[in-house]
Image 1 (tube, rainbow, N blue to C red):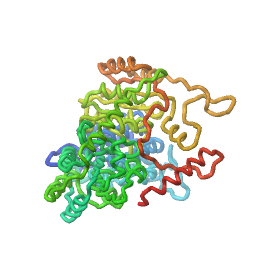
Image 2 (tube, rainbow, N blue to C red):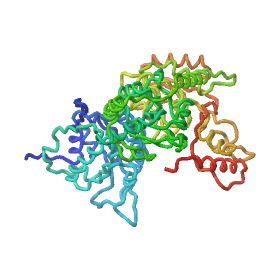
Image 3 (tube, helix red, strand yellow):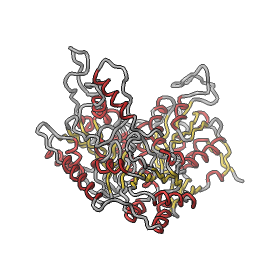
Image 4 (cartoon, rainbow, N blue to C red):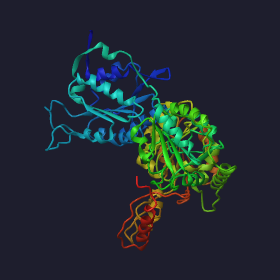
Length: 621
């Protein structure tokens, strides 16, 4: 067996360049490239390897480690987890900046490979610049912070360890049920150490994704369960997209007359115009979906991890006879809500389940015209919200209506945090799959701009719009510059409502008069942040980065700005002034948060009593 002498970093880069993935007979390159910011700890190791022998890997220079890692996650999500970027950083703060992004990837079940530099394995120069010294455990470094947010974590302290670690990393990165962040911690001296690697380590490797087939007995149990129910309801999750099961889901719903609702990750699986489409479900759900959820006697959960938002903190399903059937590749997700489990790929499961129900002559038992009436009622409500007229300024829902009408059916919107996800989940009308890119597993502020860059890298032929609040934009917008550097146009629509208004609304809804959530000057009288709004020109900030920028305070100005931004060759930003508190309501849903049981405020105590009553109606498991 032949060998080749390489540094550990050179071997890692060469290995990554030869990884491929196959699904349904289609083979493609798995690792597109590496995003990185160089510093001591990676510049002379991975940096040298990428400079001199990166093969077909693309290198993209990040501007903030968290931002570039979010771009990598968005890229993998938009590519249905079939293609990834790795992310490399220096030691210490550079590495720690990526921990939030690692948590975001793992929560959302998105594969991202993290390659943070680390302190010297030999320990001779200790303590080095940016090293954290733990007097109780000297093996600990900043990179240990990745452990709780990674699906696989390893530290390469000898160059030959790379071989087993790299294969384990690929195992997790290509596993539909167990994927997420993978962290290989790379001491800076070991990156540069040479080893005689076997040439076979660098052969082309094809990682086959075999769709998990449903068990025969499980299918029979599922068919029997559904057959006994009259008011079934489908919740479509992100797994529908990752399985490419949009057509199968639609055909299944049509065949048996079952209405379809959606999670944030599942949105756009079914066109909003489909007669069985009832919209979002749960805390940020539509009135139609939430009414159906309350009376459903069966909830068919397809590819969703059933977080607290789609279940309205386990309060959405009120029928005493309600049961759950979960189609999911992950046992962890399939068992939630004590569901009957069909552990399988979504496409395979729906295809296998349909003929069994057809043999039984099954049809849902909704009354004639019932679903149509609910849909018409909700569609009319969306039209009302999209057309809200205010003399004192722009309502947030009106801005979204203008955007929804302006964007093409293939354009992609990206969002993550604030009040926008709730309004978008309820109101945004999708025609085509994968045009709605929402990171809501972690709801990580600052994802939006970086995520838009990742989507544009994944689908350069599409127009990509980042919808972001002023709070999220202030937290992280550095990859706007990267979009210009890479020639990947993204369009940012910034809704300026003077602060963290989503949490401000949540706060006031539980007894507070509002505290610490708006961008106001400190009052000399009260000492609190209750003065006038702090003026910020966000368009000017973007303009300083080389981005074509516009400001809009009226519908006419917004329409004109959208037209101008569309024909710009590079990235753009439109700052839109919106009135605080003009987002949507809860539409017969509830979200559980902690409310103080002891307080000097009577309003808070009243909210706590209401919470106590609500909890009596929540499912215990």
